[in-house]
Image (cartoon, rainbow, N blue to C red; front, side, top):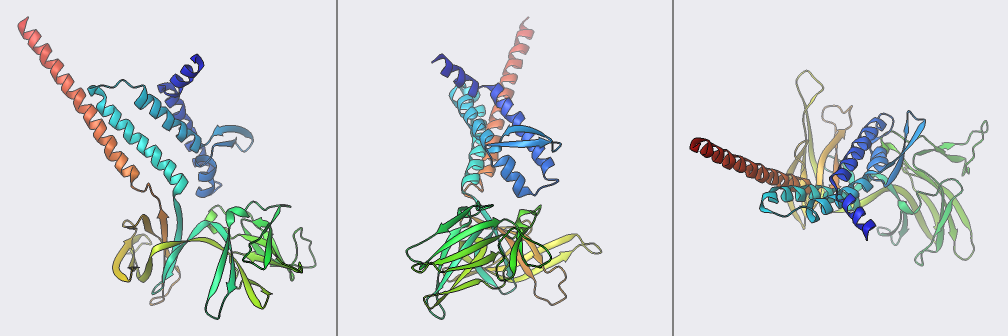
Length: 393
């Protein structure tokens, strides 16, 4: 029991909170330096979405560190124990309790964002529309079964089930709805198919004169184009068809089975929006005589339940609707001539805790204001008493 009490006091202590904050500051410093050589996504995953990590100082000396996910969890435990359970409850501490609640809400919003938020993008040319947005980083394998000339079924293998298949690893996927099994191997996060030249050798399979060449990961993870080797094994006769899937392929890999032409696509993971977005017009204005943006604006039509609504999305005014936020992210083509169709890219975020930090800031401000006023009134009362005592004497 004594040991448990000691642990309980330590976890709720002010000293433990200081240790966590110092470690978070170190983590932020190292993560900022890491962005010189790596992209934001990789740094975020390594330093802030992790439990433990190893930072190499000067690329030589390994330093084990707790990750941001672990530190935020410990900070939340410290806040509950020290800021609510152990703190003395009185009217003079109402402001402090309210402030602690606001800080806790910020931590909770971070954990919710980590666990449940998704983000991606939509790219639309003028007069195009879509009700789906794509992931920047995740991939999925789509198996398409044609059911008629104009209809088809899709079967999806999520990227998290095959992104680990590197080196000699391979895995088979099967379904009672498919007349074949799919074997995947040699997944590459960034790759490019190349023709095999007889003047050099490669260590990966060559299929129809092509092989998948692994490339170094881009600094910005969204610029990576994944690739994977696929084998389609027909049920019954075990006939195997080998192919290469690549994220930027112009034509899908296809196999004829039982009189049907099955297609296989490697594409960014997609999610469906509860509404449709149509790009009516994109407007770009620069400050006179400069290349500095003055206005980037997309005139869109939001269609939901057969009801259309005209809206504008600008750099500082996103569209927020049903838990989704659409930001003006980019545009193109950069070399477009006057009158040429432009496209607009919207960053899409679905975050259940999107507004929690705003609410938390209001709560913290109220708590600090109450605490400040209590201290001010107490000071005024003490000064009045002192003046009265001085006048009496």
